[in-house]
Image (cartoon, rainbow, N blue to C red):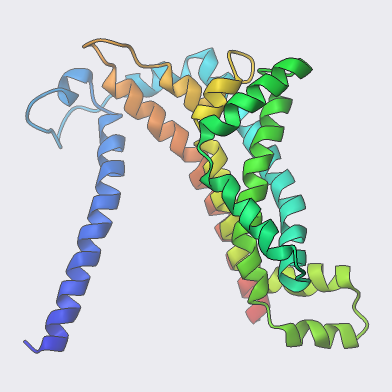
Length: 273
């Protein structure tokens, strides 16, 4: 075996090990969601067992889970919509019309992601209490919009910067205005990266836990908070129910990413035809 072939073999082996380490925990979680508790806590891991749907029935049968699902869909969806509506034009303006404040704006947006959640949650909790909006969907939408706005701007600036200026200049010569150039030229060209930014922002706020824990008590609880309440302290931990809640919690982001991927593929096919 030559050195080149050996290097390729080792590279593929490393990639396979990395893929296995990423996929196996998800596979094992999904497998445990169909197990009885006695099959989960056994010293010998079981790959073959009698499956049960009791864990999913327990999770789906709770009213709090349905309420948390509705809250998560409304809050995360509205926050991503607001973040994309405001963040994409802002990112384009930063990328295409730089000024002395552009770097400061980008650093400020990036610094919002560096802050620990507790540094954001405590001041916001005081603010929403003063306004009488604590534990409401409105306060959660505004809070999550700050997260999605920062994330989308941060990830979209490089995407718009990679759009060839020559294409925009040609469109400007043809009589396109700045808004037409943004919607008809820049957005379609940078669509792939922008969809990735929007999907990442959605997953970020969908899985967010600490801020939701501090800003809600009952009415605006999101699904991660409800899922965390399905456990019990002590030795009798309902592992099957916890695994089932994790599986159900993961389905909406996967569906959202799947829809965005389908839209991207359709747009790409129309462009190439």
